[in-house]
Amino acid sequence: MQQLSSARQVLRWTPPVVLVLGCGLCVKLQNGGELSETNVVRAQATLDRLSPPANIANQQHLNNLNATGVTVARNVLASSQTQQWVTRIRELKSRPDAAVNDDRGRKHFWLTKKNFNEYRTELARLGGEDDDVKNRRSKSIKDDVCVLGKMAHTYFTAHGVTNYKLTQLQLLTAEPGSTHQIWHRDNVAPGLTAIVALRDVTTNGPTELLLCTHKKENTIFDFISNNLSVLPEHEGSQSLTQRDVYRPLLATLNAGDAIFYDSRVLHRGRGFGTALAGSKDDDTSRPVLVLRWDALTTPPPGTSMVGTFLNGRLGIVLSTILYIKNLWDIE
Image (cartoon, rainbow, N blue to C red):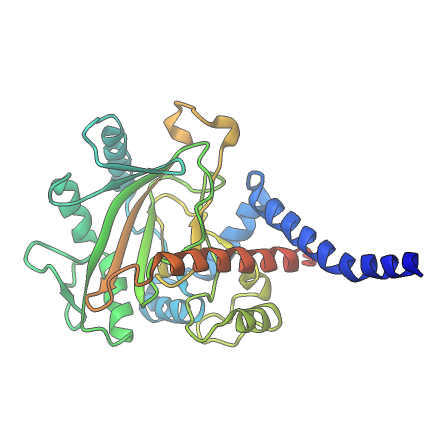
């Protein structure tokens, strides 16, 4: 009888133990290894479906942001401009006085009026801010403003936000050997972030985003039922497939392209190039421009350290669910 009781105990605990171990293995597999060319091709196909043609860009971008939290604009910067910014990042990396925040193999150069004001001014103008207008009103914007600033204007107007401003301007470069960031949100309130690629982004540490995680009504159960069962019908995203939504989106961009995402979207920077860690070859890095706009009434991040921790854990759970679901994906 005692042996029978012991056997029952083993059988009772086997399923949850196997489940926990299996999930742990999936997390490790999802985070481990370098991205493949297949990953890149799939991501680029999804990004193409989130890149509206120029003649309907504004409304379509807004539709994409409302539906998925992400949209893509092609050729935001010309080749000469991207090369100029890459040269500046290379210059800053060589300067001992540069204000750098080294985070998991990523060098963040924060552009402020005290540090590199000439660069800050130029980048701020791309984002729709100039010396005469510190806080942009969504009711008016100059015609000659770059698409970056126009996108922010469109976004905040749609959200009924009267006043907003650029809250972040930085040059960022991810180096070989960098590790994954934690999953996080830039703000828990509506806001917009843009990442502009200065070099082609493929397997060299693209930003990874979980589509549809910007929706306030989307609990983890809504996320599972909506995103993993039937793709919700949203105007502007009919061209997306179910596979697009249940794969974490990799921002594999061409130089000069920009990806915009709602600041509430869960995302992280992927690590890359473990075998190249410490390499002096600058061509293997991932240099980008980062701009973020927030409403004056809801400055980032809008949550506590506990909230940031919970968002990180939520990102792990959701990305693992997507990974497991994707194991059954048959092309």
